[in-house]
Length: 326
Image 1 (cartoon, rainbow, N blue to C red):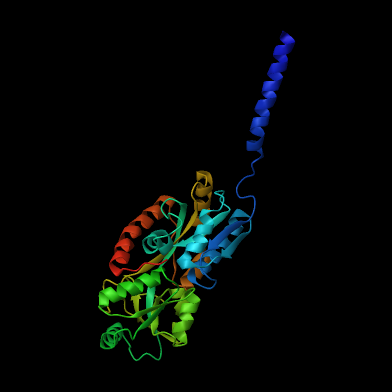
Image 2 (cartoon, rainbow, N blue to C red):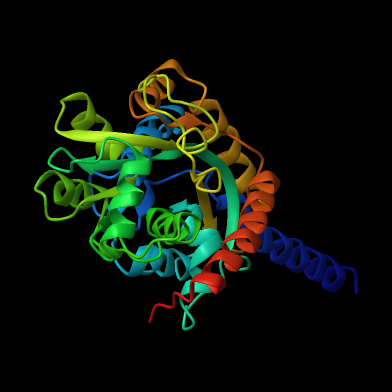
């Protein structure tokens, strides 16, 4: 009897130890390269931020952090790829405010739910948009350009980095605030949109600073107004849209790092801590500053709150504009 009981005890202990073996074998996160998906083409502000942050995270986490550009459908292609990825912290998304707050109102057939299918990590940065025109345009101010648009309806062609992006919605907001009709011309990213302005394919655009600042500084593009609450230090002579007579045209783009929903809280917390720390480094701040991007580390909850607030705001604007995308 004693021998049988001893055998059972040994077997039970062996089973218990085997049951804990997988847990004990789990490597500490991160144990392999991390991918940050950028849902737009290379060269735009989202790409620049992802690569800058990725470089910093690779140093602090001691693993490679690579950027994977998966452009299409206003950021939805890359976003859907991340939603379907394993929730293990190794596939992240550098998301825009448009992806997290606007696209569900724009795309009736959106294949994912921005509010439910992502786990927020941290706000990464924000920046006001810049209203620019090519240098062949006679208008030297927003008022002059609006007057031209009213005199010749649909004569303004304004580019954007793509349908559903914040610059696109800024264009729709301009139509409402200025009472003009114009033509929106979408491209496949900020770099292509800026090139269209430079080459006189379009009149101008309400663009992100990284896409247009180098051209403005070089005298190849004219800035008419800053679509934000304050003037930019890099363009102190350019008025805000409020100063230019369009107080309702204030557009601040923001960007956040998110993971697939269901990613363990411990991994989210680790990524949050490292991201917030990286955004405080001199190297990251200096590179962001050159592009007029303000580093904005936050808690996951703060990013979720911002996304929800903008979801309400932009949902109303999209509904009023009547814009729908397939």
